Figure 1 (cartoon, rainbow, N blue to C red):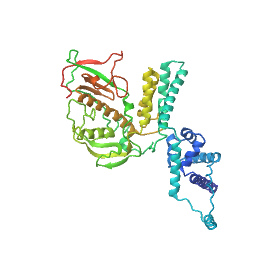
Figure 2: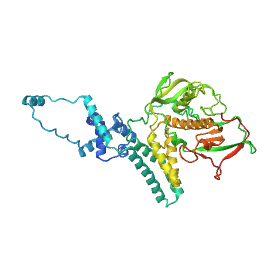
Figure 3: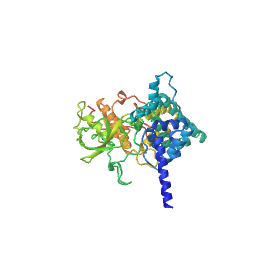
Figure 4: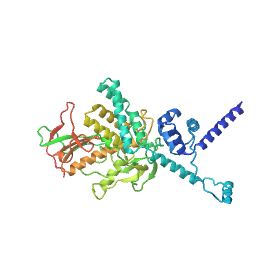
Length: 461
């Protein structure tokens, strides 16, 4: 009996190996799915894996897994329904009998390199037939509008109920948008890389080991007083996390290096000894950190420190890099998603559409917060991205504080990702509004602008 079972197991392995060999061309996997008009999500659900796994299979790699057999059987069935097209016959030209006889007797097998080139050309042809970026963006903005209309209809026009429902579905919806914006990408990313220990929280109650440089800073001369001599305005940065989606992100598995110079074509997290910050009228780029000594920082923080140490600024000494966990990187990885959400946000603001604005805000904020080891997002686990995007928001706020300082304003407070208090005519530095490049006055719970007076302090420059 055991021999029969072993035989069945061998037969199953051989059958799977045969199918794997039959569908080893990634371009053919893509062709079959598209011929059947199936989405990556539909195939993923049928096979029992995540969408990104199917995308990785179609990009080339297909490691052994419990679900690979299902995927191969699906391809086998699709191949029976949608067989590969027969190549068009070449125009017939007469050949000398001897040459024709030789060709018939000695067919030339396609070399592995030639086969790879043919598969690459097929992938190129498939890309040429895809929609343009503008069409994809328009399609996704329509999807956002359709989701809002759907929830408003379900809620019977109740805007609050519709907004609440949209916030609850924000995570799967933004992941669908992200997947669609990646459909025309030139490279794949690793969704579930092996993580170094520094990117894993020691426990649920312990803090992360990565320092994100969150600011919580007040000017040393800050003394709030109703009869003070300096008027201060609290400003809000608009959609800080949305702007921070433009940052250098590692797209592959992080690898470890010791010491050395910073490689601008890579990104990740770095163990550094930071320089001493000696500028009392500006917040430290390291945020609210009182401890001295080495610290693990993110790519945005390191790049900011290196920029401030450069010949243009010379505000600090260069940090000392001890170790790094990095991968090849790009600054535009999330740019398409950012543009779609920014355009939908701008449309909603122009139309006075608070429901859509709430929905869009939930999508980009939850996208960032669930990139780590979150049970709410099973499509991707990149805690390094989460730390980097947050740090980019903090670095962006520091940049605004520095811009105010350079313009002669006095920076009084820098808090979190989006709060900057300044003394002076800030409208000479920024336009007032809700656009990503604009600033608006912070309001309290009653809608009143947050302004106050402090005792006289030194000027910005």
